[in-house]
Length: 212
Image (cartoon, rainbow, N blue to C red; front, top):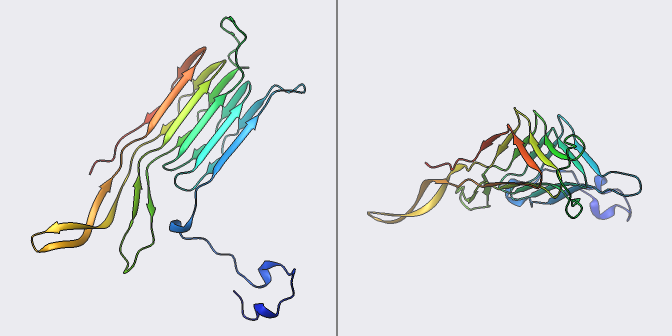
């Protein structure tokens, strides 16, 4: 708080008495973000997350992109240790055959698309400068279509690999219990692809556990 904040009139802008600061990673909370395009009113329900766009959460967050009929991702979705869900929600009519309309009813990953749910260190506050926290495993990436195709262009990437970090942990020694540096690694996450009509996938998949 700025000096003299007690004398500021009620209703004054908060910026007159406080300065913006970035929270430390240990104090940041993950959020869930959903972008959706629903058909109706003459609209088909098409969602495009363009080349060069980036949407990122804190560790453990969730990103969901949903469209009724067509979904294109060309940018970067980054949810470290969290989840990324892409889905087409419109169901095919009962007994419908193959749609045959690849461009109009598909979930596309463009050549520059990156779906990143890598493992990450989520630090915690500690005393005495001790390195503390949780080493989160890789997250979950899911691509599903109730009707239509899943297409992954060459150059696109899905990465749910684990990670590693050094923490100061208690361990048994010859002279008793001591706190010392310990390398902690995490597992990879999962990737799910589920399509009614077909999958054409040149996307690079990375899902490596980071074993020390």
